[in-house]
Image (cartoon, rainbow, N blue to C red; front, top):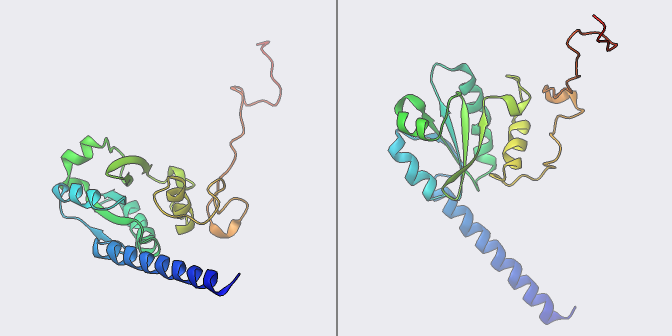
Length: 186
């Protein structure tokens, strides 16, 4: 590689770094990098229209599991500034809650390019336990392509690792009579 090629390569890298920095500043100016509450359903549409990726937590103050999501989403919002993280109280947003067919609280609506593409309903996708890890939620959001996930989307981070505290167990098929042999001679 001669000096001219090396110089052009440096210039391209510098331009890419500047572009990435400008993108980061744009995201931060639009409220990315923090997990915050929006006050009403009329604020929802401008929030999701100005950002490519949005995660909206539909919550209720009286629901304990919503606080669990809050804890994890606060961490992820700081880590994934490419996505906007917001929350909306369902009691202040009856029309939107009905329109998006949200029946279970908590629910995360995953909005890409202004359209709701996926939902995380309760903790079912997260090991069906209250003590799921932030890594499990990050993996699930990565599977939906709403955040830039660097891990393997084909395998949850806790599979085969007890340290995460989340169990994904294989359910064994059972017969109606719960016997080890199958006989119809009753």
